[in-house]
Each structure stands twice: as structure tokens, then as C-alpha cells.
Image 1 (tube, helix red, strand yellow):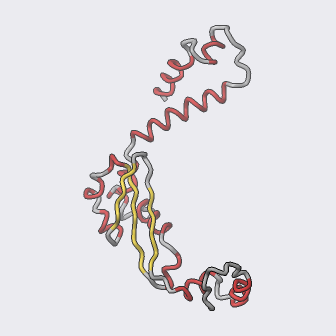
Image 2 (cartoon, rainbow, N blue to C red):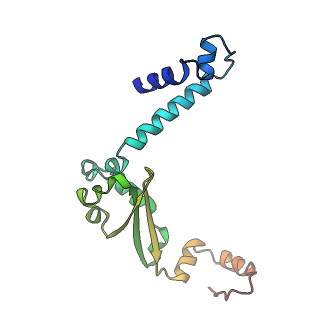
Image 3 (tube, rainbow, N blue to C red):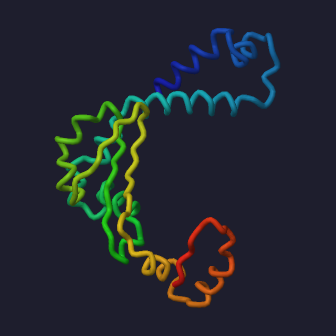
Length: 169
């Protein structure tokens, strides 16, 4: 909040902005106070997020045995449903550039249960992705249509591309 206050003082009360112009009687401020406050708050929060170690929070060992372990929640959400049919998955983790040391510190491969490809991002983004490979086509189709054969028959009617060799299920 102190940083937000300083931002507001610096940005708006020095006469260089619509709020400053309003305070110093140069402009009718109208109904824009809410918008200006929202912009200032968003700027302060964005700056704090950029400076925070979000990967460290996600990967922290403090949470790893808890039922709501953030890393495990992300892994579970990213796991492809079609792997129930067979096949294998490769894990890709995207973490911020500044969190490079988190890879060793938090023992990611053991916590994830497999080797992970790590990509470093210039932004402060974190992504957990799986690539499924070797999933049997017939089994995948069965799961997608929820074991309803009439949907497979309907799908065969919409095979409109002539350059594709379609499989019968």
C-alpha cells in the first residue's frame, strides 16, 4: 500500500496527470477517479509480481507433502486424459529465468516423478505441459466418444478431406 501511495503521489499529484490537473484546478476530473486508481494499482501489483519468485512459491518444499501441493495440483491438471488408453508422456516446465536455481534446489525430477524438459522464460510466467505420445488411436477415439458407437458413425459422415486416408473404427 505504501508503494501504491507513492505511485499516486508521484504520478498524479504533481500536476502532470489528469488527477494532478484536477487537484490544481486545471481540469474537471469527472468520473475517471476509479479508472486512474485501477491503473495505478495494476501497475504496482504487476511490478511486485515481476519481482517475486513465483516459481519458488510454486515449487517450494514447504508444500510438497501437503494435500494441496501447488506443483502436484498443476501436474494433475496438465496430465492428458488420453494416457488412460496407454502411451507415454513427456513433461515440459516453463519457469522464469530468475528461478534457474529452483531446478536443483527443489529436486524437480523426483517430485514430478520423471525427467522434465525445463524452458526458461524472460517473463514471470510458469507453465506445466505434458506431451502425450504413442496413444493407441482406436482407444483414444473410444475415450473421446465416451463409448458411444453412434458418435463414431456420425464422425465417419464428416470425413470431407479427400487428401486424408481415414481409419475405420
